[in-house]
Image (cartoon, rainbow, N blue to C red; front, side, top):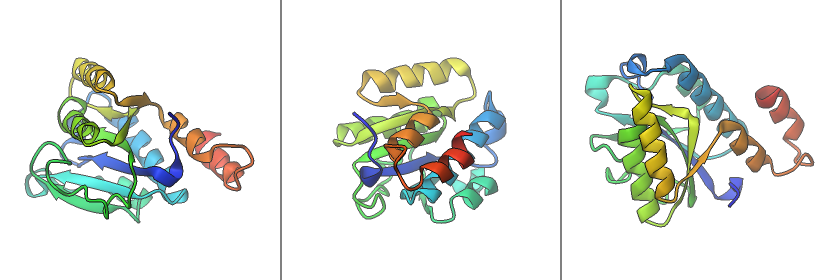
Length: 180
């Protein structure tokens, strides 16, 4: 199935300043999430950002917040954003295709993705925008999500599927700014 921008929302999970340095590829994951946040903003895709135990772990990285000024911030203590009860139809703006990025791939991303699938959502996990402290955990998390019916995608797949065609009025602008 293709990703339809009219049915999509982006969920960025726990990209917090105290968690990011522990990742095995912090710079790449941060850059890809800033890219995704900017793309979603420019294409008017609803975006939610979760923060886990913000009082202990700190807030979302400021560059992500700058790239996604329209994003709604949701707080949680459970690992799954879904089980925290904050992924309401209103917060998701009626989207049934959820694009997930963030950390950690084998914990919060995994549990959220599996919960969303169990409740009938189409889930797309952005492989180049998720991470964990250990690469093996990323691989296992992605494999389990895929085996459970989640689609594993790249950031460019999302951009081109949201655009749909070179005839899209935003194609030139998005291509120049995000694809190059």
